[in-house]
Image (cartoon, rainbow over all chains, first blue to last red; front, side):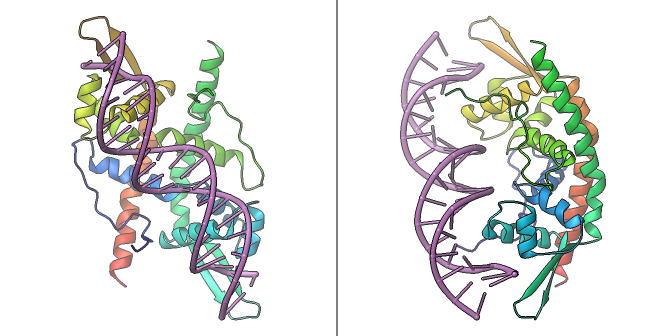
Length: 129
Length: 129
DNA sequence: CGGAATCCCAAAAGATACTG
DNA sequence: CAGTATCTTTTGGGATTCCG
């Protein structure tokens, strides 16, 4: 069976229950594109400027080429990064963030603020018990 | 070995690379508590009002009791829902959202708006090719 | 260098059965 | 009713090897 490279966004949303509203689907889509262990670090790394495959790999520490390749493809499909190939020898491929990726700034900021507050709340709440 | 019921929020963040900033960690915390297939539908279902275990199960369609139980526990640990037991026979247990759960509204709204726009963009972008 | 192919492992989720 | 216990399936991620 073919691997789905659409990152989920081409599919319909099978809504079996009324709890599955359009709002939830929007949220799910948003969460989906940020999902996984490496998407955020990858995005932040590329925000520093364009980088080559191997450089990204080193910057992230211990991501394997298979995973890095997959994550980059998904970011590409979501138009957050562009891939450029230069026919040198050895081959040179660079990745860089798009203007559209900046549309994430607002939502990422909200998530960050909420997340930091939430961690404080929960940690404090558990210490007091 | 004990099951970790802290939902990840008690742990440290092992930061091997400089791409793993505090901001990323805040975002990861936020994404984590919304994670999984059922958290959002569950939250929205309970927003309609308090409900009993079996009622929630029916409302969500096909969630199994094991998963529902686990998800409710995590929502409880994150202080989004409260569990109330009434010593009737047969037993009655209700779940309802907390005031604190409303702190999610802003971030959920941002996610929803961004997600809907993103889906439109990507779907349109693929049709034009 | 920039990957793809293959194999492997752990976590998440589901099916089914059972209990207080 | 409100769960728990056990088992199987699915998924995500990683290790290793190889190729143009």
